[in-house]
Length: 371
Image (cartoon, rainbow, N blue to C red; front, side, top):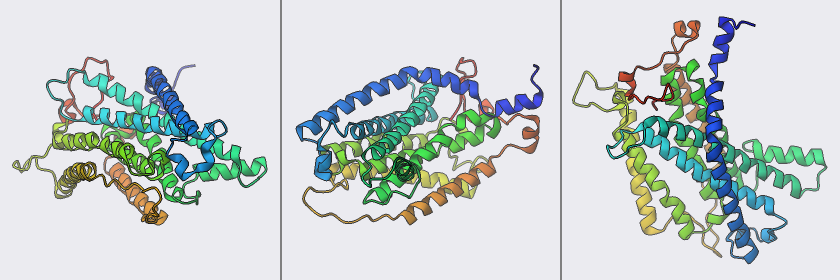
């Protein structure tokens, strides 16, 4: 059966062939992630069995490692998911920054690694949530029937704002928002034929918010880093290269069109874009300084064993308000960068030229995309 032009346009709206190719390319990456997850699980299991796990100071009921193995596997996926999120964000920042001369890796290869690690990260985050759901169903502390425990556990794990116990009221809400934002923002690349290259690149930049939420979720709810100490400080220190690279990316982006030309009135952006770019650079610089202060002072927000700490200083209302602001900003960006009606009617989306995007020839046969 011959494919009609309308069917071809519908098929091209989501680039399934590119997604399938990236999924195949992600197999080695995902395999490495599973191996590391298994190693983390073995480490957590051994620490629980020996009684050395800091989690037991928070939840002593979990001391039976054999009985609660699913919970520890959930924790292992959470840690590997955070590690892969760190890797993919670093790759994305390297890809979108002006590359130094000593970096010999082709841009297309970095881009491909960034996409495959993004897919692996989404998978690890999903496994983390799924295992937590399975553990709640298994334990069933309320003694519900199977339909009741499935429905209750699903709501607590997958519906933002339903979980209502202790720190999880905020931590699980933040983690779920990170997961649900990661999926559309991470997969925006495969919709670029519909949205246009400018829009998908702009939307994909909000992935940094997903990463911040993931780190916040870990520091707030990760019982392995619940208390202050070297392990928690290490998690903070790992954010220093991310912040530094983000600052470098903002100061020296790969695309000439994103660079500030304050002395050239003809190339200087408008007042609002200029203010936004300056604010981004200032925020990244302040983050670098803040992380250095945390590392130097050791004041990393952890709790002290045996000492009653302060209560939560963030409410669900504040989190929802922040999400509303973020979604409003994303909607404005998407509206301003939407493809022209003529491009939509023809089934093609405008793609930035090489001179506008700062793209460099890669010889990758179309694989190269500029972020």
